[in-house]
Length: 603
Image 1 (cartoon, rainbow, N blue to C red):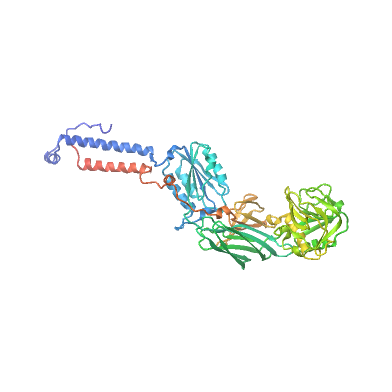
Image 2 (tube, helix red, strand yellow):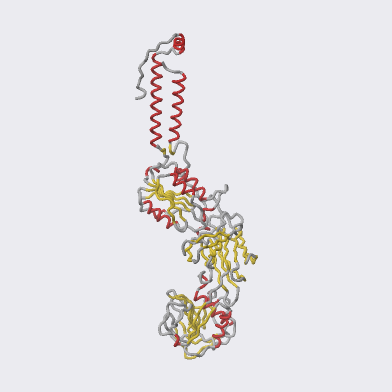
């Protein structure tokens, strides 16, 4: 309409027409050329207006099927394995965030995008939004946490979000793929962005356990499992360094093949609160979070046991064995007769010596010596005459109850005939009959001894019998797997710990991270989200470390499917939001029109 509007001519008196005649001679044009210029001026003006409309329409050019969905859920892995770096020093998480930012440029702004970051538990970082700037800001805030992943929980969260605005696509950004079978029956499209490197080698510590040595003060047995990832291009020789209180103690050299796991057991000397540090060294290791375990040596809580006999008479040899354990400081004993049962005080284990109660206790571990008959899970018959045996035959020499016991040098006198039924495992045989059995029945640990220590010849005055009683007690109570009972919390990262106090202090376990960091406690439950040693202002202490066979088994990437690769490709120059292209064309048309119709004006 502006173009069609014409101003009326006005008559103006001038002193001379010389200059106008000169201009007229310079711009003499044919009628058809003037009409062409008018048409061209109209087209340029129309294009300027048209591209202005395009700019306001926010048109997006997409090279894929992103516009087929109403919403997208981005499932971003932030677990420990995403810390693996490539040749340029870029972690898998940084690579995933970079590609996502480029990929989101191709998504129309009217499509809602959600962001879920996950490790052992998922977190909805950004609910569905069409504001890209807010989404990118939340994406930048996602960091790696040294915690194992639980992809199954993450995909359930993603499915719930996907059901809010169907149809939905899930973009999974990780170094490990999701279980595709979980989405077969749902109307959800899953796209995988596999960030695994083409070749990667990693040796890590995948299991750790420590327990005090029975009857020995300030001595501990430690077990460590190391593994090499299945995708490693070749085997590796690793070195496990052990130090106590900052002083090197010992080392082990271990040869590992790809996918192989090996366990190492060693004994250490140390006192309470000294730091035991295990460090795994290997050439070409590209993942360091699983190479260090540092824990304060525990102060074992004594085992409280009750020794129940049918009368006040005591077997002096059994009393001597229990007293030996008691002197080590790891055992406390209550003694009583049949009339003291049931007990008024809670105990960790009970020892029935030549007697069984009328009702079997099912809530505590039980050790039975010389049973008079059958009761509960114990099936036995008292022999009319004791039978001596010069030697015993071992059923399972590796069982913890027989730890450090020389079974071949013992002589026993059998007083009861045992039947090892169910999960009870025979450990010693007298002839063809089991004389020592141990096992777990319906969650209750049980040790049954079908002999009399006082009547046996080569047993009560040897070190084997106190060791046998100590092993039986500690195995039955099973304290070695309960870090809280050892006086410290030995947890894997991602677990929750109940704490007391107002502040927690973390000390890093890796070299260069020995500084402390204090955090105020907001509740009595703390997530183990760091690797290192922690202590509260109330005196509670413990350690957290990454012990995950899944995280240590770093995967290598295979050949990426071309279609999947294109789906996550970086935006080309002619895709994405076209606003800036349209603005550029508007400026170009204005410049062209200015040059044509103002420098060479039309009259």
